[in-house]
Length: 189
Ligand SMILES: C[S@@+](CC[C@H](N)C(=O)[O-])C[C@H]1O[C@@H](n2cnc3c(N)ncnc32)[C@H](O)[C@@H]1O
Image (cartoon, rainbow, N blue to C red):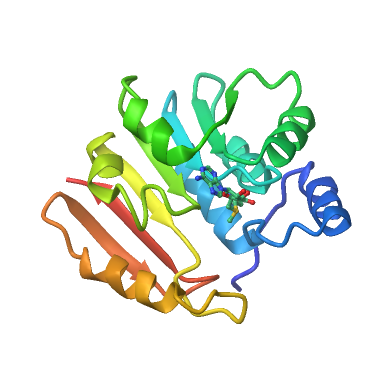
């Protein structure tokens, strides 16, 4: 019942590469399938992902994007960013940025975002007001990895608790979802 109804064609290769290089942080298929749906709800949308990894999230988001939509994805690790960029070579709807997302958010002056998938700390555990300030009215905010996992560092539960202290917020209609790795989805009101 909870399984994705489809998978992006590139996903198997991305997951194989992730296994080969020991990258264990790719988004789950459940989160990915939901990202596809949310991306499809924003035709011509300006979309953002914080934390590209090897591009699993990009593959899922692209599944939902129409031809006029645009995705910017930010990754600090030059090796991961290069691998993701080469996987999607020739895909003009995606801009791969190799940068520290904290600094990137501070410097961003472009148009508002219609969807932000925040898969690292910037815009989630730090700079939350800033990230939400960059959303267009009706813009979607989605984060995952909110349910405790064996791989969490010792100080992570405190970080998660501080994240929940920020919700609910007057400028967002949001819902926590105990599904996949634990999600929060909100829309800017
Ligand atoms: C959970 S993984 C992303 C997985 C990816 N979104 C997916 O769907 O498969 C988080 C990524 O954030 C990257 N990262 C860590 N610190 C960062 C920073 N300061 N700025 C941007 N990316 C960062 C990590 O290198 C890692 O690749």
